[in-house]
Image 1: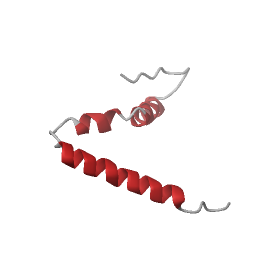
Image 2: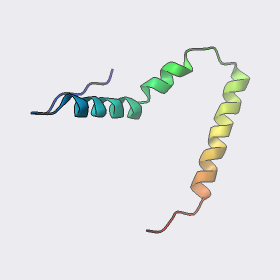
Image 3: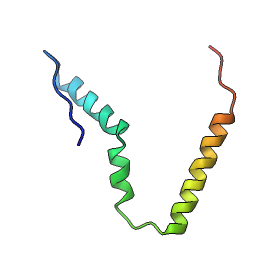
Length: 66
């Protein structure tokens, strides 16, 4: 469970924004969505292979210079 504590006179909006960011970093929502429906092992393999392909393409792409 992600936990965020208020710092001084912090507004509710900024507290909520920090909590949302923390949840995304911990990838809690994506794990919950994965468990909503059964995923066959063959589908799981295909999804992981596609993710691996996307990651390798991104890493081989030249970085933009600033």
